[in-house]
Length: 334
Image 1: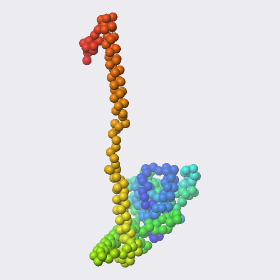
Image 2: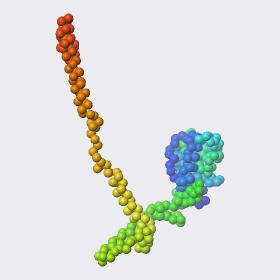
Image 3: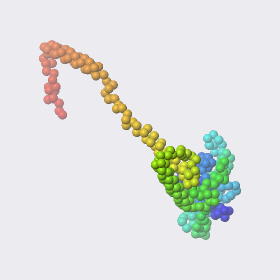
Image 4: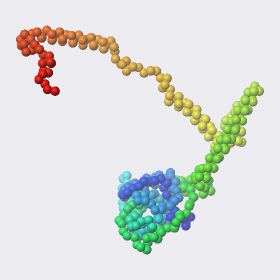
């Protein structure tokens, strides 16, 4: 284990923190605080940091005085350290920053331009939680003696230890993959396949038990004997033939089907709802007819008044005798 850690094995936060071209001091502090909060309920995975891309951001757990793991990049200058004070959510904190420049991947980069910054909160946070950000820094030439000298030994060793909680009340607890056990070391595929086989066998035993029960019930019905009450919770046949897990799974499926019928009826019961009233039902037909008759009477009165005034105006001024629109059509160009 110590040899693997010396080769760069470390505990990594399993979720991606995204790609960030630039990362400010305040953003790094916020990511550290949020990552520490998530680490209370999320186990860290064992793995390597190897040849990270520009902009990649990682959250690591580095216990005690352990050195920072090898990341597959060779740096031509020593790492510098400085401390800054930040104020997050009204609470002062002290952030320690380690910065190293002029890094390159031997055999892959033609120049040294890779830059790494790692942050940890020494006051007001968890100092063993390390946020690492890789970016592009100033370009410089690679020393010929280091051009093809690898930064670590390849291939990297395979490590099959389960994930583990690193902080909080669950610190030190391991999380084994499905189908695995406290012995660990079981590949994910093998554990999953064995679990599938176990479930298939239990389902087969459950089906066989149900067929046997049906046969017994038909036999009792044929002999006119009253079948005894079957206690689903304490049946000896179930305990002898299948496991509690298979029985619980079958009951869950049965209850799920029953609830599905209930919710289906609730979702589609509107099909039998009464026909909604017509949108015109808000109008009163008799009232509308009365208003129509009143308007017709007013129009007829206005027409009669206009007809009475027309002869009088024509007698006073003959120019008002013809007021039709036809006389204006000749002078307008369209």
